[in-house]
Image 1 (cartoon, protein in one colour):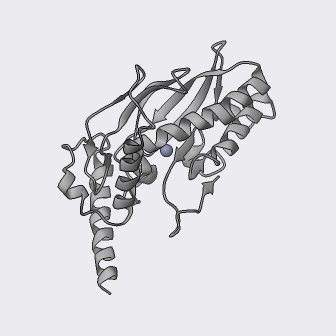
Image 2 (cartoon, helix red, strand yellow):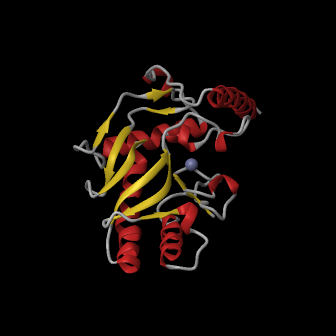
Image 3 (cartoon, helix red, strand yellow):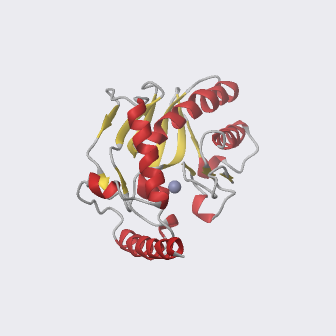
Length: 234
Ligand SMILES: [Zn+2]
């Protein structure tokens, strides 16, 4: 019973926070307090624990194109303890325009998706590499799909990225909005990289998911289901 009451209180608190988030999407909060993080429970604790183990692993290091920034948000709501600004992925070979603000955990999967899925598909379809991703959202303190009353988006935890287009080495562009529905190599490339993303992220949404994703792919590392093993791939 006590557990249920604690859960109910947390739900009310998180909903109140989400409403304030959606009312002001670009609001930045003071640095997080480590004492506060120590008392986290539920999803906030899960996210904080994941971020800390990623940071402690040393898998993500600062480079000329990846640098850490001060904490954003608060451990109980939007934000990340030590987010990174990523100007390029895959060893600097794939630019991210504009630069994405992401938590540590997102950086490895983006690199692996580019290496194992995107570049092989680009070589197969176009005979060249992708050199840039057009990023239309990364960190943003808001509710899902910016709808009032909805749950906190993974964007609010810097745990998500929205990609609208791929730029090839010859400068040509493959956009999700214009390319997805055709029956050509651009469309086949987009479907391949969308499907392949499902091996690297726990949530993958594209134009087939809903009207909110008609022009971009959304990838995140949300925890789905009690065991955290469920995947959303639409
Ligand atoms: Zn998104």
